Image 1 (cartoon, helix red, strand yellow):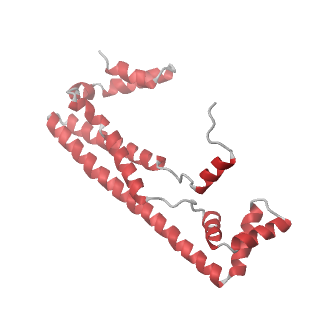
Image 2 (cartoon, rainbow, N blue to C red):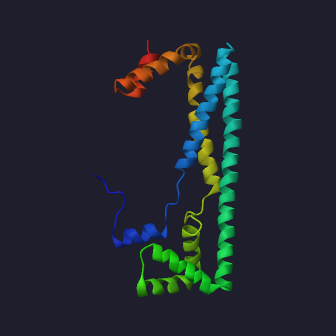
Image 3 (tube, rainbow, N blue to C red):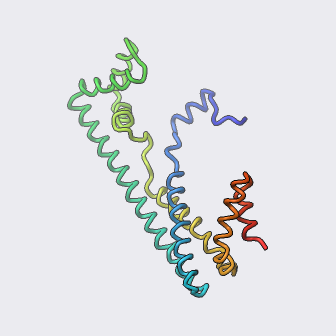
Amino acid sequence: MPREHGHSPAEIAARIAAPAGRGYLRDVVYGAIDGAVTTFAIVAGVAGAALETKVILALGLANLLADGFSMAAGNYAGTKAERDDARRLARVERRHLAENPEGEQAEIREILRRKGLSGDVLEQAATQIAGDTAAAVALMLSDEYGLAPVAPRPLRAALATFAAFVGAGAVPLVPFVLGWGGRVHAGHGDDLGGVFYHRRRQKPVVRGALVALGP
């Protein structure tokens, strides 16, 4: 079984010094689900109206670009607001450390006590952290406000959402690009039935979908 990460002193120091951050899995899942659902809804609607394939593709592509951009812009704005709020709270904590160091040290002591420290160790740790503004602010943001220790990156989050939206949203258009539009439209019910059937028989779901679409 491969290890997830090493525990040598050098590996620990490198990993803690440069944390990976929250990642972009949430942004990818968010974009992919919305992209697949909205594009499929548009394609199913216009295909049901018996419009030409080029019309279906035009509407599908328009949805990919417009809705994908909208999702990315919304995620960018939301992530940036989250980052800006964290920066505001950091300024508040720095001001509190300067104006009321005893009160902030008491808060740090309580946080550390809840982490299991006690006695002289607790007092020494609270005093040392309170004397380091950066460390004290980071501890307060994570344990008092529940914020992630690594700041989010709005642009990367937006790009991840847009790429996932376009990638997943393009899937319902593939049959029409390949000239299978009418066949896939007529076989939607059989496709779902095949998936359900193979799922109930504990066989691969993908196999069920392929069998339903096959000759």
